[in-house]
Length: 326
Image (tube, rainbow, N blue to C red):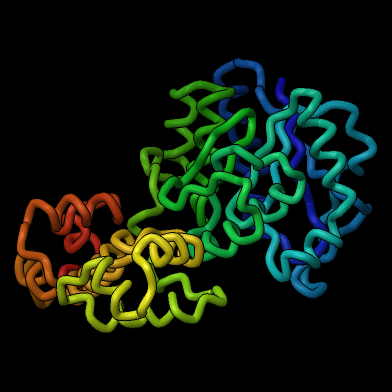
């Protein structure tokens, strides 16, 4: 039986992550017992005190055990922790050596959504692929440049460390873990019982690209604003470098450092974001949208659109168009 430690952090943690994981893993055990099979999870809430206040005192969670009472655990689950990253780290500093010790002893570690910020403090994400909520991707990269953050994935697995993307993508990671420990058949039954899409692997369709401007390079910010105002035109890297009186290689280096995108990637993402908004409104067909954002090659447009969003333009329109919904 796998011992599962669901952490109950101090501060403002996601109670959905905590209670939801407890409920789903407990349901796996109940399902197995109904089949006259042995349960696979021994789930415990683990904290730093006997009672943990949440949501400004509106709720209180009572952990089953203190971290010092856990001699060995197989799986450590870290829920999302909201608020200031540094404050979260200070309030929960005692968890960090505990997590590292158990990882070094063979435990697997799971972080849900923005819990990646806390897990990264341990150094265990250095050199490893990981995910977090797409809204905070650039901030995460700035804080933890040695971690290999991927924007598009809904979950990652690397060297006994699992991470999930934004918000309710934790459900897909939970299903993945259930399949790993209890088998595909049980995972499918749980996905049906809780109505979770078991085959969702990407958070790309949900990403809203607003341009990464949280940096101090004013020249690059001006270049970003120029791109966003003139995205319908054909813009080249040479033209931008000349316009802002900077050498091309230096411009490309500074742009990548500031935005985490190459210049051409940024131009493409601005164009595709504009296309997404037009498709969501639903008044134009795919070809009309393509021409309106400066593309003339339908194959190139479809390829770029699917690369960035994970969906074809037609499928995106069918999924999110206001007119389709109406």
